[in-house]
Length: 540
Image: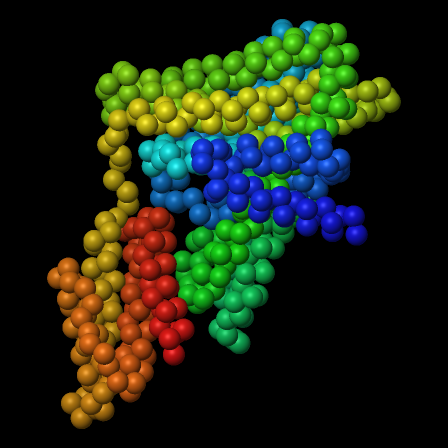
């Protein structure tokens, strides 16, 4: 009963945070409001929420990464894979080495292996926190997609390096070759397991749908279970559960392109996933606030004892580490841009500098860093305490809060100063796609018109002719034409209009499969067709 009440309290707190942000006369980033609510719950109401890192990773990380993998534009993701991997893997390793050595130099009481572990868990960025703190301030589309791709992949690289570093502390030994081979094995196993489970579930649902019809509830339920199945199966096989969840989302997108579901299924599933995403993200930041109180009350004394310093020196350590993270990210991004084609595309030095600064500030830390540092073991195999555990938790929590505050304050004005950079054209053209879909609908209606023949029912012929007139006007840039119709005409028109919408949707899927339009445009146009189909269905 206690956990049921806690769950209801967390849900109510998420709802309350949304209300506060909407009613606030000043724009306040949603994560900061949720963190403050978590602090009030723990500090004032005395709420204590036991946070088991393994349960946290299982319940929160797989569905969120699955959804990110599902919705990230695949054309842009694979087209920008080189800069994404440069940030998600290269920058993570650069951060681990640079920040690890810096932490060990700054705080000699932290062993080098532990310093590397802390640096590894500080390396992953949080796309959710970034979106929330920047609010309505739009990032350039290309930069936004690169940052989303980075956050999708660097969780896995950072956590895997973190696990190897912790293992080195626990066992007292480290093999670079063994670590590299193990890392590659985890990546391959994770990607293969996640994609395999997603494809198997997707095609099994298609087969069952052909046999007995599509059940919207079952489709949604299976989509909710796939990320957990991918994560658990990969972990059991020795792979990266995080990469498995992300790759399952990417694979699910491709499965949905072949044998698309009912419009009702797509819209209901989208609403369910949007709600789940908002709930999980909100709970994560509320837990962050609650854990902040626990860190202050339980870990701060241990941290001071480990470093033999007072609170102000600890705060200085946090600021120094956060600054080093920012400087290393700035340096890596500047070098990457200088060595890439972006350097030739953006010739103005001020614009390049501003773009590098935005990318550096956008490296917000969040849930993965919190859960990872809390997963540090309490004891070593010989029964001694894990060295520097309390201090590592305090440092990680401080860096998370500083990165959130910095992005909240600095990111919006920096983005507003960025001139409109000429973006690479997205895959496909909206007008081309709309024209192709309209022509497919016209072809479908002309086929219906031919099947009715000259002697067909008058109201049916009139309905088809009016729809043909509408679609032909749309080709010429016109809108709906129509007067009030009698019920018989309306019923006929609805039937034939649904057939035309189905032809539009099939053409849009064909364009996406052929790579003529990208995911964003495809999703937008299919949603328009789905909404129109839903309105026709409801008006029966």
